[in-house]
Length: 155
Image (cartoon, rainbow, N blue to C red; front, side):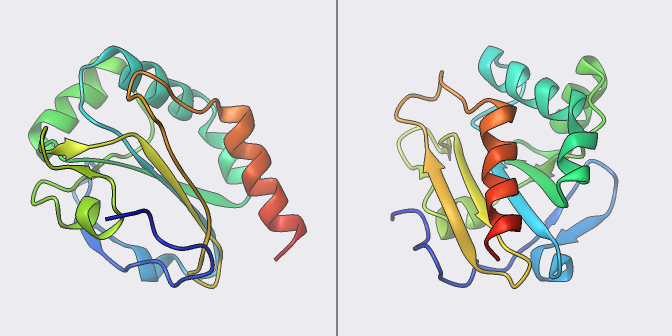
């Protein structure tokens, strides 16, 4: 299944977070949302990516975006990972792989998500998507922030 089409409504979901609450995408309407699907906790590229997102989370907030990192890891694993790395960003668990499937990021052979990004506008429509050809690659925060800024400039 491919990533969602640009302009299409973003598939809604509710997932548990490391904060102990559940996050529902549609409840975030009115704000830009960046979904950051990542393959697995405790891996080098994921750690670099998520620590960078955590370190610069304030920049994403200033840009008016909520960042939702999503993996298929269970909440206890994600909490341990978050604590070990000192991340300030909450992580979401797609343990049942339903959201990864709905967004076309699930790698069925590995039963984990591919590294992918989906930017959703305040009206809940998909405005930008990108899936890495190789899970050892990642987008830099500067690129992600520029995509969010472009969305603000062209609502």
